[in-house]
Length: 341
Image 1 (tube, helix red, strand yellow):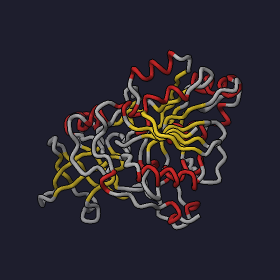
Image 2 (cartoon, helix red, strand yellow):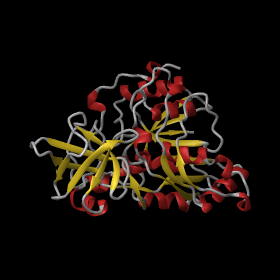
Image 3 (spheres, one colour):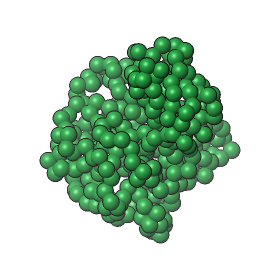
């Protein structure tokens, strides 16, 4: 498969720069794979598609303020986008990277220093002068993606987090979950649907561009995950009882699929339920756990677009995207949602 097969043209005006005022009032496109139908709803209507025997699985990762700004001794501006949170040295995407020499020190907005070291796996290694958590608390910015053409605002500190975020560590938001409110989750639970959680610290592995013409040659960057025992039990029981597993977001789907073998075993046989995953899902993959997927509209030629194409079929997904553009849906992180059943 060629990367160009997963390209499409999106009018810039459809890239959402802000979320809708009420999270659950965004638009929802519903793709029914069996009937091959596409319908248009509002996100709060999603409760209608869930049955009491189903379970809803969400990613409870919490986004850290992973962007730092500083200056070189020459006065030039520097941006650090952290890929992880480690002390005292962690990996970051540094701009402008080419001009920075090993050993050069950057003065941060907090008054601290960051020393640029050698090359990491995908970025530069950076050493901080005091605990990173303290620096981020004082000077960290919300890591909005580059297609949001503005500096982060105070409201983004709330808007770019899910209402159920808990485990700190992500450097990008699991955006499919942004549409849920506490009230909507209460409605889901009130219908008898079990709600449970996994953790995947959304990072470079999720948003890294594919750089190979042959999509099968792309290698995913590893991301930390955790599958709680309770989640494995609930998902296992749902499958055995004939219910459906609704994964909220591609990150949740990747955890569930990576842990498919663990989920299907008995409690006594389960072992490792946390670690790092580099699972790369593209067309041809056969899903073992996920029955329905809640997601956003994704960038052209991205691993996320390939994952949803694997789940619903490339032609069906691209038919849906053509409709979304024609109907002026809002795209990407702060955009509208899609439910694939």
